Image (cartoon, rainbow, N blue to C red; front, side, top):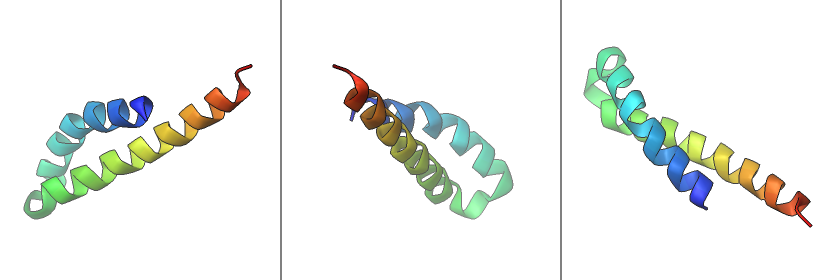
Length: 54
């Protein structure tokens, strides 16, 4: 869960800056969706790593 939270909050500002230029009307929505996808991938990767630990 920590990996997902960190992934979300670290990718939100760069994603917001990029989407403000590409899709100015929906910048916050698109940035939140991109950050959510990164958080989901980080959560999945964290679970895989934790399952392999003894």
